[in-house]
Amino acid sequence: MKKIILAFITAMSLVSAHAAGGEGIAWDKAPNKTNDMAALQNGAKIFVNYCLNCHSAAYMRYNRLKDIGLTEQQIKDNLLFATDKVGDTMKSSIDPKQAKEWFGGLPPDLTVIARSRAGHGGSGADYLYTLLRTYYRDETKPTGWNNLAYPNIGMPNPLWELQGERTPVYKTMVNHGHDTQVFTGWTQSKPGSLSPLEYDQAVGDLVSYLQWMGEPAQNTRVRVGVWVLIFLSIFSLVAWRLNAAYWRDIK
Image 1: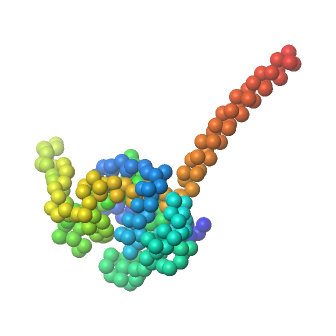
Image 2: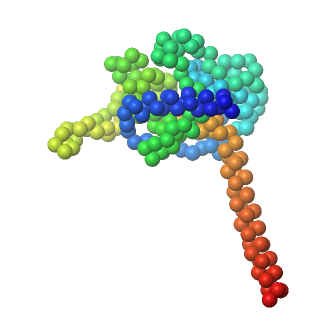
Image 3: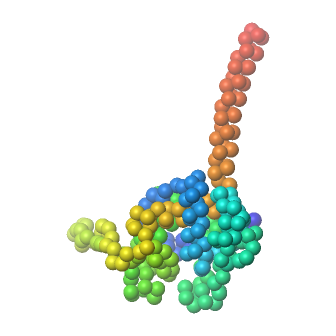
């Protein structure tokens, strides 16, 4: 329990920096695919290939991926890059000293990152979905990248090979007598390996996996909850009829 609390605090430290840095833009609605096994499997693959190099998910074991339909052999063949044991936790191999030199600190654990951020009327999944789709090139930054959802972000775009490079487009509007730059869209300056639609789908898969990873039992909990409510509804009906029959005999 202490380790889970520490992971939650670490994740919160990432997003609190965003709150201090500015409001950013309104968040887009993330697709909810936590019941889609194919999407979760693809999200796990993207996570291991593009996120696990720097970020850990130290409270998630590889063999738990069997819950999303993967066999132990598939996990060994396709996802075990940082360890050789399927029962190990998802720990990154980045050197803490190098991480501090490159990013100013050790990248936070992502086990519960999707549960730790909410605001702008959206969920943590909405935040992550928007964040991973609003990177743009900014040569004034040390990493060469910036982000509309998290201005002055210290992390470069981890999925730039898939997305390519984009430039935000702004329109000047007059607001209370002052010129204001309003974001209106994107121009693609360099294509990625995926089309914009394919990239959005891939990010949706990744975010859904992060949601699932934060609480692997959530779908089971929801299903059990539905059956409990159905049982209570039926029991209430039976109890009501029994009560009516009992008092009818007494009268």
